[in-house]
Structure formats: structure tokens, C-alpha cells
Image (cartoon, rainbow, N blue to C red; front, side):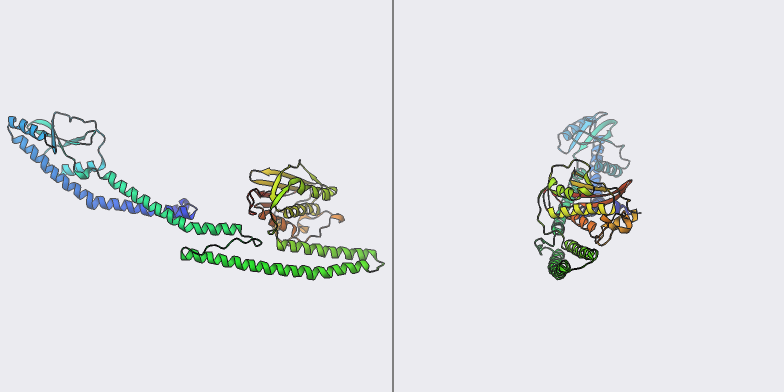
Length: 452
């Protein structure tokens, strides 16, 4: 079972820093208040209560021992004092005041303890929070009010100070978190924007030592990847030249060569064309489509050539095609659509139905065939490079559709989908198989509305 902190802690570093700071500062404030109350406030209240108890006792004894005529004169004289007020009667002048505060209760308990059995105390507070103490003087009830000691109302000040300290600590934690998160957010954004064909500007290597080291490591990594990509492109260009040149010569030789076995010549030509197609697909997958610029492409321009080429083989639109404009890499999107159609034709069965619809955050293309489907345990592996669906899809015995692929078709579609901020999903249907290509607006390509 996870701990309470593990279940309640925020997911972000900023939230965790602020929450942990709030917890520590809050506990520190509570401990400070408890220690202040026990070591400072309570002893001071007891001291003030002792002084007030002596004053009340002195007033009570003086009035009790004074003759009746002198008692009234003393009462009138003390009533003029700014320190003591005396009220005769069973009730104080205002007994409907607010409930006593916590410190007032503590003070009165200390006062009762200090006075001991000198008098039977009862007390009230009025609307101005003046404290009235009930005593009996010479058989008559009196209410005595002594000016409130300065420590009767420090609760609000104490809590205000604690709240101010807590707020300053939270502000400091938030500023510190922002200071730490700013370079981390820049690193995250640079990682998301990074493309081999268009590397992002290097990160600033300043700030705290750990953050500067992290930024420096990222810049070194991107530089190494860029150099590796440059070397890879040189190698691929060399492979393309060194392999395709003899292939072209071999093809030309077969065309010029006189051979009575036309079937053998045709077979050799097909094998050469197949090698050339495999090489082209491998180079296309290895290079990727990052370097292709993002432009505006209409959906009819994307789908019409595919329907014209593969329509005779049973490729149809299952629903009217929206007349939309998208932002994306046209060659990459065209290649993705062709690969999905060819995969459905090679491994499935006609008709192959295409559907294109807009989603809340992009577009979605569905390519559905009526083949035999794929075992569920093998679906995830179909988008891996060099994995072919021959054994999984069990293609129908039609020589015209015998698969000649390299196992890069669906892997390339997945690569293109991720480049456009989307994904490729494969699933079995009750009467066939379906590939769903989705993209998102504002995907990794960096356009405002990157969609298919």
C-alpha cells in the first residue's frame, strides 16, 4: 500500500516543492505557536492574572470594610477612573457580548486560581470585549471591570504573523520552483521540437551548476546526433549510388541481351525492379520525412491519385470525402496512404474501404479490408521494422497481389503518423481488418493545424 504522501503528492515538481514547503513551514509554525504559548504567553497570562486578582481583592476588601456612606463615595470615585469601572446590580451593563476568546478563558482560569477562595467569581464580556467580574461586597452584588491587560488579545496578531511567515515561505518556494523549472521546461520544449533535419538552437548553459551541466549535456547530445545524421546521409547516398548504378547497368544489359526464354528475362526484370523498390523503400525509411517542408494540402489532392491508381483493384471511398485543407508534409502523407492501401490489398481482400473524417483535434483516416485478420498477439509487432504480415495475415492466393514488401510499410506509416503528432492503430473487425491513422492539430511538425 502506498503511503499517504505518495497518494496525495502533486505530480509536478513545482507542486511537490510548494506542497513540501507548505508542510514543513506549517509544522514549524504550529510548533512555534505551541512553544510560544507554553513558554511565554501562559506564564505572562498567569502573571497578569495574579496582578489583577490582587487589585480585585484589594477593591473588594476596601469596599467591604468601608462604611456604607464612604462605600458609595468610593464607588463614585473609582467609577471616574480610566482603569476600573464598577456597576451595581445582578447583571452587568451589557451581558450579551460575544463568546469569550480562547486567551480570555485561559486568563479567567488563571484569575480564579490566583484569587483562590477569596470570592465566588463569575464573569461576562460585553460588545466592546470589556471583561466584567461579579463580586459580592457587603452583601450587595457588584460588577467590576478592570482595563484589559495587553496580552488578552494577541491571538489575532500571533496568527497574522504566522500567516505572513507562511505566505512569504510559499512565495519563496514558488519563486525557487519557477527558477528551477524554467530551464527544465526549456529542455522539454527543445526535446519535443528537436528534429535531425532541423535541429533546434542550443540551450543556454547558465544558471545553477546542475542545470547548466544538464543543458550542456543536451547540447552535446544534439550535436552528436546531428553529426551522426550527416554521416548517415552520406552513407545512404553512397549506398544509393553504389547499388543503383550496377542495377541500372544490369537492367540495361537484360534489355539489350537476346534471349529465347522470355519468361526468364521477364522474371529477371521483375527481380531487378523488386530490388530497386526494396532499396528505395529502405532509403526512404532510413532518411525519414523530417526534411520535407509543411505545406497546405487539400484532401481531394491527397486521395484522388490513390483512388485513380488503386480503384480498379477494389479501393473505394466508404463515405463522401470532406473538402478540407490540411497542413502537413504532402509526400509523407501520400506515402502513408499508399502503404496502408497496398497493405490492405496484399494481405486482405477487396473491397478496401477508405474513410476520412475530422476529429476534435485533427483528422482520422480509416483503411478497412475484408481479409482474415491477424492474431491479437501479433498485431503490435506489425508496425515494427522488417516485420511482414505474410504469416500473420495469411494472404489470399491471388498471384496479382502476392506481397513483395520489405516489412517497412506499416513501420513507415507509424513514423509518419508520429511526425504529424498522431498514431497508427491496427485492429481486427468481425469481417476484416482496419488500420486507423490519426493526427493532431499543432502536432510535432510545428504547424498550427497539422492534420490528415
